Image (cartoon, rainbow, N blue to C red; front, side):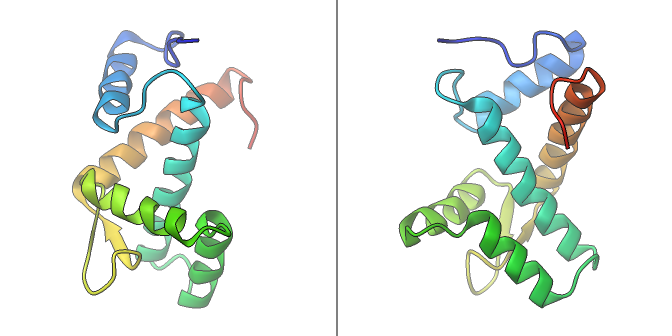
Length: 125
C-alpha cells in the first residue's frame, strides 16, 4: 500500500520531505516512516557526539545499541548507505564518520517532521 507520509503538513515542508524520501531511495511501501525515524536517530546520535554532547564511550555504546544487529553485513551496509547518499563522510573507517552539510540538513528536516507529528499526537517520544 502506498500513502503520503507528509499529507498533513504544509505544502512547502511536504514537498521538501517527499524530495528527500526520493533522494534516499525510500518508496512509500513497506515501512518508510520507521525507516526515516531510524535514519534520523542515527544522524542525531552522530551530531550529538560531534557537538561534544557525549564522550566516546557513551557514543560507542549508544551507536552499538542503535545499529548493531547480529548481522555484521547489515551494520556495515548502514554506514556505506549513509556515505553513498552523501549524508556522512569518513576518514579511516566508514563507521567512524561525521555528518556532511547535507546530512545535517536532512537531520533538521527529519526533526521538523517528527516534531510536527508529535505536536499532532501522532507519535510519542
